[in-house]
Length: 326
Image (cartoon, rainbow, N blue to C red; front, side, top):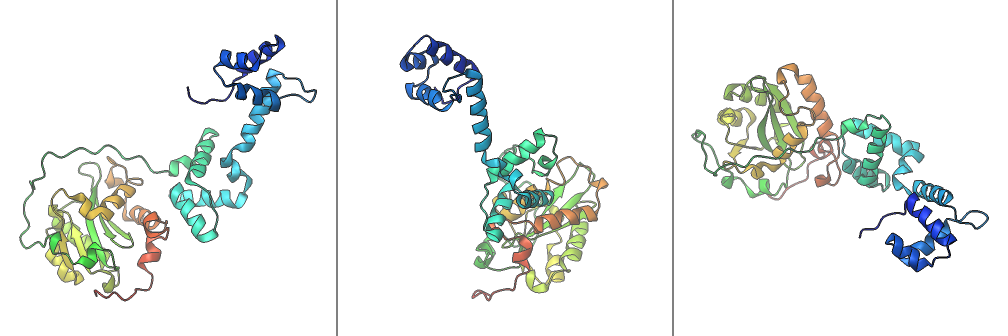
């Protein structure tokens, strides 16, 4: 039998049986509780006249419960509560808020405490729960692992990619993919830097190689050339213009093996994060690049556990260190 707190009905039974001079053992057996539980109840929940009264015992119990709840720390600290609210509005997760508080302010508050505050705020009519990410949907399994799509002559497979890229030892190695809206409404081309998780996203009207290549060139040319060294794509035909990208950006491209999405894990994860702003089935014809830029900035400026709660922007724009493999 699992542990549970005494109820008002059980306290009424305790009062009645004590008035009948029943032993603590007998009361415990009647309620399915230990003798020690009954003893503690009678010693800690008595009135000022040392009498046990069920309604007063219940009131004392509820008062102790309210005082013991650690999540209420947020209500008692105006600065901390304001900080949590500000970061939630920037779409930071409770884990990211907790990690950054420790890193920047040497304050320890658990993600669970923040979640409890959010749900309590919601029950009181608050809106901060709306900034939490949506849960992942179940992913369908593929039948077989063979590549059923057309081949792209001249593509360079991932097994030829330098070891330094695999190990995330430097800034400048990217992964590319697309996020699809409602059928026929458009796409978002996403590019994620492997070490920093810095994201460059651009809305595209269609998934043709010409459109995606042109949008990618325009977006990536805004970055310093030294920060664009390689790109790893999936095998979609939208990346058939990889050779033009190589010439335009002076970098080398590689392709993951078909249906091996984990070989572009940073990009896959980031696409999932983007779904918080652009859910599956959303009509992308109703969004513009300004909205995509806002989501991109929020992702790039919130801390990530995988980079020790630094933000992707902080890591990407930090002064580069010499790498022996360069």
